[in-house]
Amino acid sequence: MNDIEHYIFTLKVTDELGLLSRIIQLFVWRGCGITSIHVQPQKNQPFAWISIDAYNIKDLPHVKSRLERLVNVYNVKARKITTQE
Image 1 (cartoon, rainbow, N blue to C red):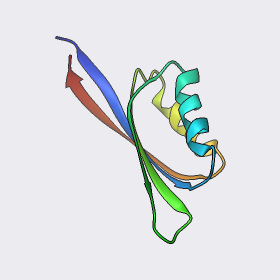
Image 2: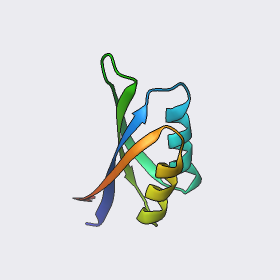
Image 3: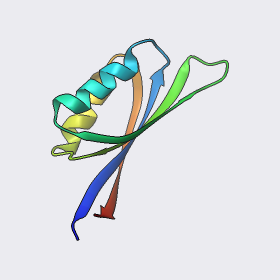
């Protein structure tokens, strides 16, 4: 069996039209796969939390840096998860 490295990215973002599309494109352009996406808007606040389970991340610091540079993204955390195929 092969180990598959997944990363859970957690982002605090401004809840804005089109932002999720820009975030997903960032992963796609780098050849990363996305297993799941969860968006949790905050009541009575302009912020939302986005969790992305992604794999095939070749350069984690670069992906995090690109996410942090997106307008309306305020906090990015990545946690490594290893599963068996």
